[in-house]
Image (cartoon, rainbow, N blue to C red; front, side):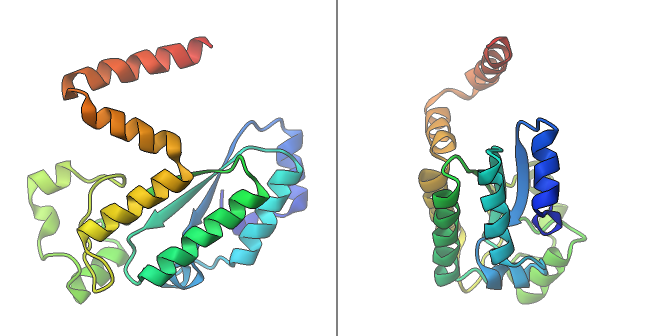
Length: 194
């Protein structure tokens, strides 16, 4: 749900509908990065909305993007501080973090190409197209970060705000690739039986 569309009346209706979970499109926890994304979202509005969900005890997950051009180290730290602040308001708040991806045809792609943050013809290669992922594929390199720095930031975000995901990824890397689909299926079967 777009955060800027919510108010107490709407959150109360969500509560009355017996909603069991809500996803909020936060995008980023730094105002400057939000402006560079052309997101018209005020972080004070985010705070107000999270307070409302805390008041009505509705579980919330926020989606956020990192590795967006213009995300300096300072802006990354600002975002982390904001995420911590939101968790202090609603301790059960969960986060899902995604790496900014310059998909062909998007404004981000055009910007990255123009600024030299991605290589020309990046998505003309089959191996590149088949590996597009918002969780572990790094294509953008700017004066503020390279791929190693984005990987480091992702680790910080997951360790700090999404420990379950961090631990699951660590275990996944220890297992042979052929057993992962079987374990994933078993997990989903057990989850639905509980």
